[in-house]
Image 1 (tube, rainbow, N blue to C red):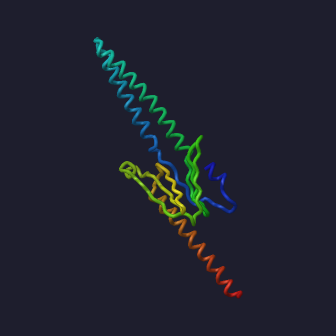
Image 2: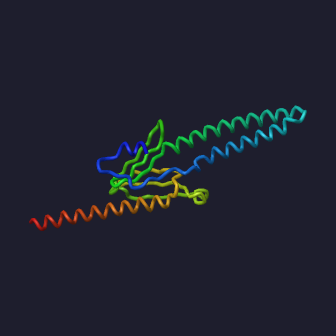
Image 3: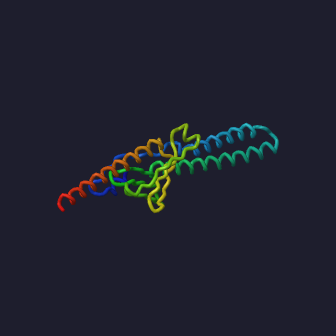
Length: 183
């Protein structure tokens, strides 16, 4: 939790953290499987002695190499997402960060959180991950993809915001009753 720990205010405590699901590696795995299939088909086609088979095998080997390089690129991209995305709720605000070179951060004070929405596709429902979108007053909206247990994340954020608002309302009532008693 590097970014979040480094940017806590005095008396601020982390109440909840969310993490990215390993499903971010699925496109890389799929691309790798496609490259293996192209390679296997190219090797089986290349064993024939005609020119057309040789050309097809060469093309399939080229495609296999392209898909293999693409799977490596996707794997590195997924690893960066997994290692550089941070999401936490403290007793004062919602803090999130994503990105390595191009860093994007979100810090919304709890009273300014307007809504939290969750989007899950079929695969997300099956593997229990999805996109969590935090909307703040004034139109601030930020989405975080592939969050583990997104419905639970939404429930926990809502519960923390509600507890904060209740504590704030109670402290306001105490201040108002002291003013009436002093007056």
